[in-house]
Image (cartoon, rainbow, N blue to C red):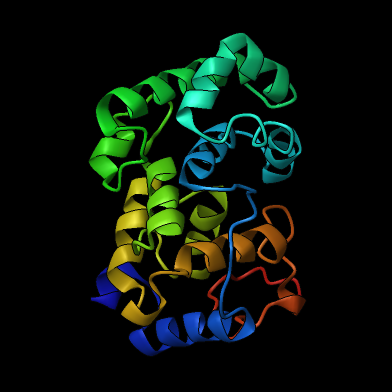
Length: 217
């Protein structure tokens, strides 16, 4: 199976994740949230924005709007005041308010636990749904962002021309013991070590496995 979806062999793939697991046994996302609902909103707000920027904005938002009902009461304009430092805040505010209405009307105010129901909500795409399913509900999903896309292609772990192909390949090749946390390990690797412009290969524990030819050693 690995040969079709990865340039690495099974043992290399296992070692790849075993080393990441050894280094960080219980990785966590960097978005701040207080419950499933605030996690969902935080991920929606993080599209084309940094986690740091989202966290800065939501520290004043969660104390006043940590449920769909409270967020709805805040309204679009009230929400905009809290998130106006985040990119695309106008459309995001409108989506979050629509999302709250749907959660109340269709899901009893609860965050649904299936991808199909999540992506039907305003502002929620497949990547957002995967993040929520993974973090909130412990489902072994892999949300492919720019970091994971880069790492998967650069290392040879799961090459693909678009995020859907990379996600499909990753779900085929990630060994079962590592599927729950793989998403976080790969994001953190891409964010802090395997950086876009100049990867810090000297700090990486995967250099002997990685197939990237232009290593910065």
